Length: 448
Image 1 (tube, rainbow, N blue to C red):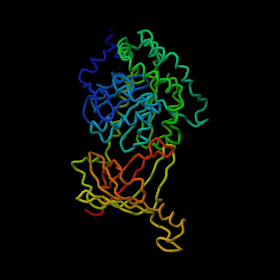
Image 2 (cartoon, rainbow, N blue to C red; image 1 turned 30 degrees about the vertical axis):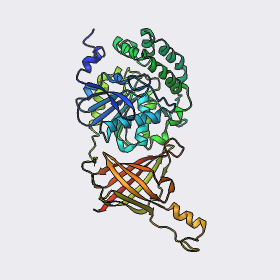
Image 3 (tube, rainbow, N blue to C red; image 1 turned 180 degrees about the horizontal axis):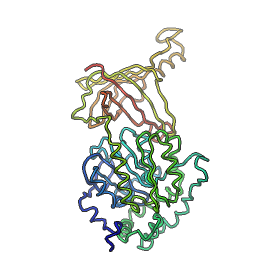
Image 4 (cartoon, helix red, strand yellow; image 1 turned 120 degrees about the vertical axis):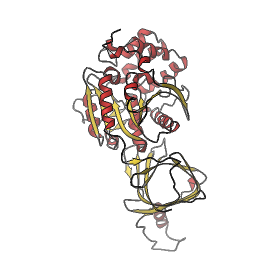
C-alpha cells in the first residue's frame, strides 16, 4: 500500500470519526454523518451509496455538518416502494432526511444522479437549499445547438453490462462496471470495489436496482424530469459546477450549466473522469470548501417552533408560482392586497386579491352575469380554519374556502422569517400533474 497515494487510504480510516445510522421518517434512509456547523448533504450517483464520498466526508466535516445518504433503492436504504418517476421521490427523500434531522436549509452536493436530484430539489423547494455543488451532473438537456458539437451520449448502450453486474456481482464484473467512470482505472481501489460488491450481493437490492437502472438508462418516465436551460435559469442559489476533464459528457456541458444558472461557477479537474469527487478528492475538497465558505447564509434567519410567533395580522407583499415546466405566474398580478391572520386561540383566516378588481356593471351581488362572477372568483382567494406550528411548517386545517375542494383538508406551508422581519410561506402544489409548481408568498407583519 502506497502512503503517497491518498486514494489508497482505507475507507474506514477516513470514516473513523463518523456516525453511521438509519433515519426513519417517511422513508428508511442510511446516512453517514460527521462534523458540525452549516449542513452539507452529499448525494451519490446511480448504483452508488454514501461511501462514494468516503474520501470527502472527513475533510469536509472540518467545516460543515456533513450528511452523506444512500438514496432509496441504493446501498442500505429501503428497497421497497420503487417508483419509475424516480426523481420526485428522491427529492422527497432528501426533504424527509432534512426534516428528521431538523435541518430547515442545507448546502447540497450531488454527483451524477445526485446532481439531477439536487437541481430538482433547488427548483421545487428553493427555500431549503442554500447553495449547490453539481459534480459531473446527469439529468441535464441543453437547448438544441446551444453547445457547439455537443451530442448526448447513448446511455442505453450501458444497460446490458449494468444489468449483468447485478445478475452476477463478481469482483471482476463490479470492477469493470466501476472502472469506466474513472479517467485512470488504476486509481480504483480493491476496497471500493468490495464495498460495492457486498451491497450488490443483497438480493433485494439487486432486484430493485435492475428496475431502477433499466428506467434510468433507457426508460421514458424519468426523462419527464430532465432539467432544461429554461429550468436552470430559475436556479438562483449559488452553484458550483465541478467537472472532470475526461468525463463522458465534456466540460463544455458543465460550463454551459454554470452559465445558465443565475450565480454559477465552473471548475474542471484535470485527468479526472465521472467519479470526480473520488478521483480528484483533494482538489475537490479544497474547491468545494472554499466555494461553500464564500456562500454561508447571512441574509436570513430560519425560525423554529420555539421562536416563531405567528399571532397577529400579516399583509401580503408578493405571490409567485414557479411551474416545473419553466413557467412563472403571478396569480394576483404584480399589485395585490390581502392579509393572513393568526389568533391566540389557534384560528386563522387568509384573503388575497388583485389590488384593482373590476366592479359588477350589471345586476347585483347574486344576479350579475356569469362572466363578472367568474372574474370576481379568479381575482380573489379566501379561506379560514385552524392552524398549528410544527418546526418550520405551519399547517392550515381548512373549514371554509372560496375554493371548495380545500374544505376539510390541510394546507401545509413551510416558513422562513427573513432578516428584514418579513415572513415567507412556500408550498408544493398539485405534485405529479402537469400543473405541479412551487408557490412562494411573502408577508409583512402589521399587528400583533
